[in-house]
Image 1 (cartoon, rainbow, N blue to C red):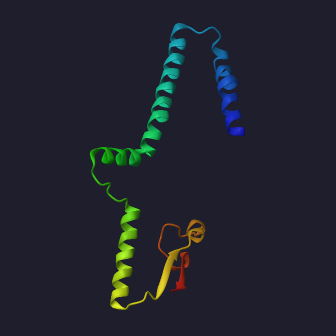
Image 2 (spheres, one colour; image 1 turned 180 degrees about the horizontal axis):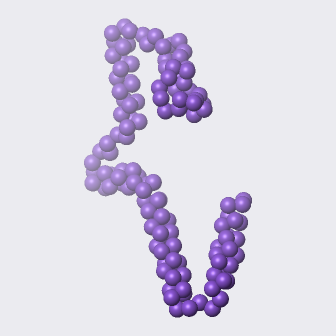
Image 3 (cartoon, one colour; image 1 turned 90 degrees about the horizontal axis):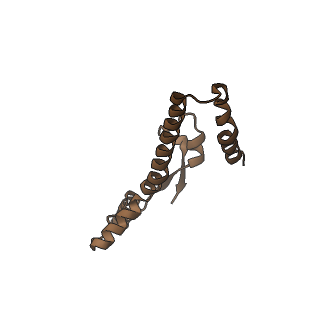
Length: 128
């Protein structure tokens, strides 16, 4: 709640108060404020338009592939899942059962002092 109200109060109260010591704006000081507001507006426009486009880039890619009639290539996660399924099928065909299932424990990785490094205390090992 404070984020919106703090932002609003800073734009409405604090920012104009910073210009009070200048009194009546001379031409150069007024030009300075105009340039700052234009830079602010351009940067805000770039972020407001650019961020949704960047976040939706894969959706746009899929739309373009669909319009072109080309099959959509799989994502990295889908490739990994396919690889896991192939390995499981090969193990099953060879009669090899997976001995353990190793999965990362996200809570331990996030709170671990050695976060970012691979250590055995950050993984949960369970019998298959």
